Length: 250
Image 1 (cartoon, rainbow, N blue to C red):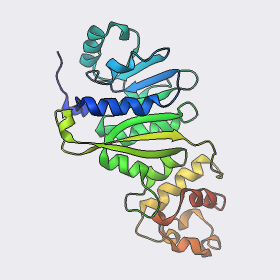
Image 2 (image 1 turned 90 degrees about the horizontal axis):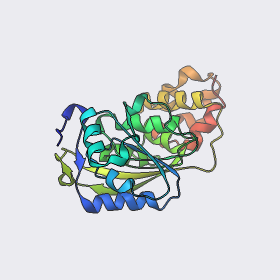
Image 3 (image 1 turned 180 degrees about the vertical axis):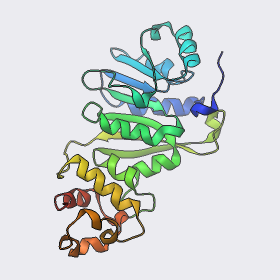
Image 4 (image 1 turned 135 degrees about the vertical axis):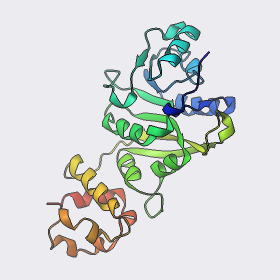
């Protein structure tokens, strides 16, 4: 068998209904290559390996779980990447989908890693701590709308699919979980550069209680800051507005 490691944020999904709903959310999309992040004890993996005609890989940091999975599912012998997901290179050439019951202690970093791979990853279906899932899907004007919301939704349409309660896991986490779907946008934003867009968003939300004028004054010329849009706070701007403002940055 195996042990559960708190240090790796391991909470293994056992709810068959939740598993089926996650699989259904994935299968509505067409794909030829699939990466599972953090397969753990294989609750999703045992179904994913039976999807016909796909190239499947999984990335897992815990050597004990890797041994367990390979013994239980021999087909995985050469399909598991033994590494920290945050440190790996893209596991495929060409397009691939991503799925996972993502470790909660690195869930935000996982989403930013997906953004790095956005040209290759058209769809993500994943489970996160509900707070993170809600932030990823939040719209402008809401209290949960922030850096994560903007930088993910700049490239992906995000749908919050459903809640998953603590009792659906072993051991039960102390928080509610949520499953979201990311679908890459067909039209790209027009911004000065990706680096300037990221810089503006992070700078604006770093002091989100201040008006934009006070929060970002260091990256715009004084005459630009006279525009009325700078009377707003970061959470009041749409993603499109952030993109448009990058063209006015120093």
